[in-house]
Image (cartoon, rainbow, N blue to C red; front, side):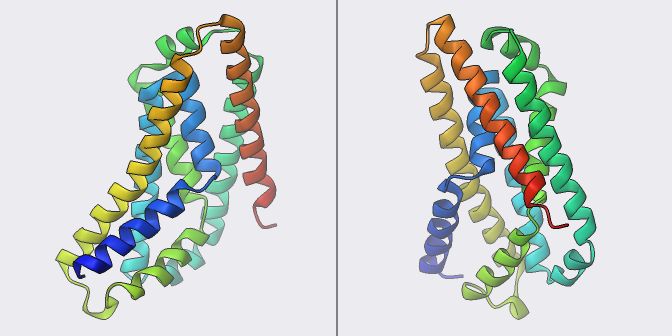
Length: 208
């Protein structure tokens, strides 16, 4: 890959990652309500899911992915149900953001955020087709070398992860400015509604 091709791929993936989506909702709400560490954990899960799709697309395993469509559907439903549960918990919980941050800062709590980001990303089987159609524009898959593979992985991680990281930091900064307990509760419940909507969308958009 040339420098120009690398920059164009980086910009393309970054712009797409910046578009409003369920992954953006999850990053923002987790960062705003449970703290920046959880937002970063979700970003890690999202990047891991994208890198899995990148590997499948680059190695020409789209046929295998299509054969395992039922598994991806199950993952998508599990991700949707998790978001619904998480949103409902936030919506009806009386705990403050500070308490949620304190209790959710454990390794297990952060792992849950990573898994949430991973499930949300892996549940979108169409992403494999997107990557499989995008990469041939930048690299000859028949002559794919280790250097090209590592470069694409690096570009994907930096572009997607960088954009989502920006959302996480921005959400935590904005929430940090909310000093009023009433506003804090309103923001907490508003985030719960967003997660409920995102989870419901994932579940209802799953093919029957």
